[in-house]
Amino acid sequence: MLNVVCAGLGRIGAQHAFNIAHRTPNAKLLAVFDPDESKQKWAQDNLPKDVVFTTSYTELLAIKGAQLVWIATPTPFHAEQMIAAMDCDLNVFCEKPISLDIDKAQAVVDHWRTQKPHLYVTIGFIRRFDSRYQLAAEQLKKGAIGRPLVLQTQSCDPRDHTGHFVNQYAPVSGGIFVDCAIHDIDLTLWLFGDHAQRVKKVFATGSSTVLPKLKEYGDCDNVIGVVEFESGALAQYYCSRTSSSGQLLSTQLIGDKGRLTLRPEAPTAQLSLSDSVSIAREASEERPNYYDLNGTAMLSEPETIVREILNGSKPAFGLEDSVRGLRIGLALQQSLREGRHIEL
Image (cartoon, rainbow, N blue to C red; front, top):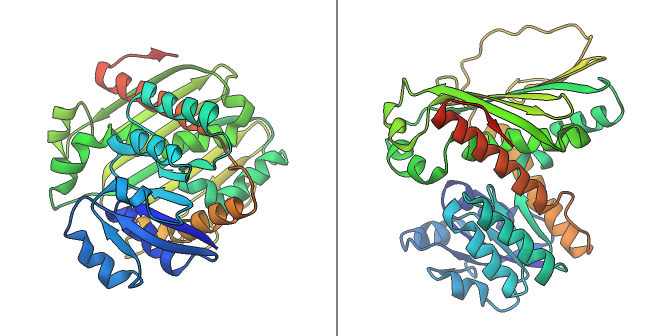
């Protein structure tokens, strides 16, 4: 049994805490932290009665018997909280991204590598725990599409009509490429492998037609970003904050011998390998949300991490990829603001 404490009870953090408490084999949730005292009622209503609630992160780290800290706090706190957890000799999971500052992100990696290399420390890129993307990775490894040439992704969030996103979340999110496309960037590094070792340049463009206030933060509501790797491989990302059709995700990988297409929101089989026949479907009234598309992976994620820690295994992917992905995301965000290519 692995003893876990959770930091952050926001939208994603609360779901993580619930999953760890009720749906993760060999895990026991000891305590949760959130600086907002009002979150205590949610904890009392949804978590086992013996789970401790605290508004102090320091107290959370001092919980007797804790072995893993699960961090899902706002991004500006990630780097500091990860280092503090490592200094308490605790294994660490942290939601993406590792930081909004490349130097702080690198400091986390350096601290782990030089001071605490025996600890299990990883970043939460949910698609790496999704069986559908794992299947795509296996197909690529087998050479099903030959040499990968182009990766195209679509990541669309439903439009928030409450004002919370524009007024509270967006100003501290780091921007659409760092907050949203970071999943697609990590996917690129994973699936392209050696073909994504070195980035040549990036370019981004976008508009703030629906949510014009985003301009105040140097951000947009709909964007397209392109990454050119020195290997010749290309990645193209389309991200939106204004989807009227719910949460939408799609990935297409084009190689010199074939194509892989992945559409997690499709109601039936979600992975197709060309040259198969395309299947058309009528428009659905359903509007999938984040949990509809990622719910299974959100269960697989803690189950995998708990199992690996108990078995003494290392994470399947390293912190270094998190820093590489952040560097690309920040460069795309810079290109979006400045309207020019950014060379890396």
